[in-house]
Image (cartoon, rainbow, N blue to C red; front, side, top):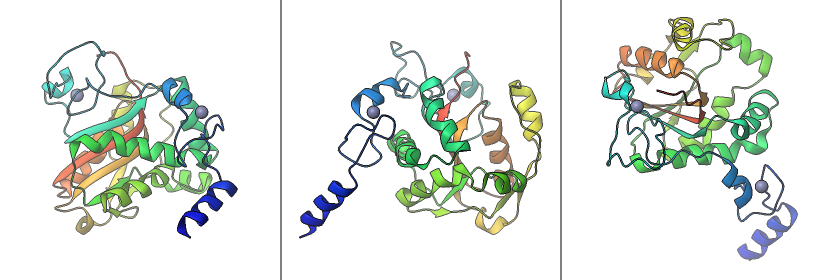
Amino acid sequence: MVNFFKRLIEFLYPPLCPVCGEFVGMHGNLCAKCWSEFNWISNPKCYKCGYPFPADLDLGLKPLCPHCAAGECDLDFIRSACVYDDVSKNIMLPFKHASCLKYQTLMSNAMINSLRDLNLDIDVVLPVPLAYKRLFKRGYNQATLLARPIAKYFNAVLDVDSISRKYRHDMGHKSAKQRRENVHGVFDVLNTKNISGKKILLVDDVMTSGATFYELNRVLRRAGASAVYAVSFCRVVHAI
Ligand SMILES: [Zn+2]
Ligand SMILES: [Zn+2]
C-alpha cells in the first residue's frame, strides 16, 4: 500500500533535475550531465578552510593552505560544495534574488555532503544574518532556507534570533581588506546563552573572501562559542 502511494506521488510529482528538467532518481538530485558541469570541491583541499588544490597534487591526508599553515584562519573548519563559476552562479543568483526554490534541496544536500567526512557534532546551525533592511526588502534570508535541512540533518537547533546585523552598503567588488573593514562590528550577539559553550555551524550561500565568516567567528568566540564551523554552497577561489 505504501509502495502504491509512493508510485502515485512519483507519477503526479516526478523527480526532475532542477536545472534541465530531465527525469532523475530522487527529488533535488541533478541529472548526470548537469552534475558533471559543476566544479565540485573534493580532495585535495585544505583540511581546515577547504581551499581546493589542483587535482594532481598529492599532499597527504590533512594538507593546509598557506593561510591556515600561518594560523590565519580562526574557524575550526570551513567547507564549500563547489567553486563559484558561471555554472554555480546560474543556480545561486536566481535562488538568492528571485526566490527560485527548486534549487534549495540540491544546494543544501551538496553542503551536507561537503561536511560529511568531518563527522562534526553540532549544537547550533546559524544562517549568516541579513540586516533587517535587506530582509524586509527581499522577504526571506536565503541562508536560512539552506540552513533548515542542514540543522535537521545534524539534529541541531536552527538559530535565527541570537545574532543581529547592522545595515551597511553592499560590498560589491571590493578587495579582501575592504571587505574585512566593511563587515567589522556589524554583528551583535543578542542572546549569549544560546551561544556560550555551543558548537556552531555558520551557513551561507557563497563565501567570497571569508570576511563574513571570520567576523562572525570573532563575535561568537567572544560570546563563548566552543567551536565554530562554516559551510557555503559555493566559494570564490582566489589564487594564493
Ligand atoms: Zn540536468
Ligand atoms: Zn586553508
